[in-house]
Amino acid sequence: MSIITRFAPSPTGYLHLGHAASALFSAKQAGPDGRFLLRIEDIDQTRCRPEYLDAIYEDLAWLGLEWETPVRVQSDHFADYQAVLDRLSDMELLYPCFCTRKDIQAEIARIGNAPHGPDGALYPGTCRQCSPTQRQERIAAGES
Image (tube, rainbow, N blue to C red):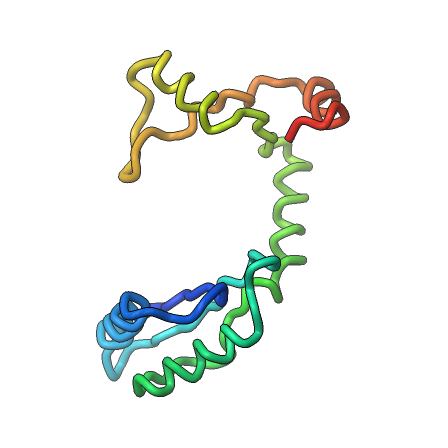
């Protein structure tokens, strides 16, 4: 069985020691018979910079790492993600949440025994019951 690992930096700054350790560990875990993938997390278009992306490639090469090509660049797939979101929306499986983090924390505290995942309490579905009309009204009113 072949092991597949990946390193997914965001070009919002230069790599630091923790990034280097993570990349080296991932490449080592893949081993000679595995696959080491690089994915560029550039979805934050306001903070990502080409010079940081160039530096990522240079730094990883300096570390002696080799990765499969083509590199998956998240921003190249926005249309794919939008198509899936549109399909889910058409199936009425998506809904916007208008709550603040504080609202969600208050709801979790109110119900007391909210389901928990490895990172803490799960989103309680606070806005799930809003009708399509209510959603549109809230969006039109500028809630987001």
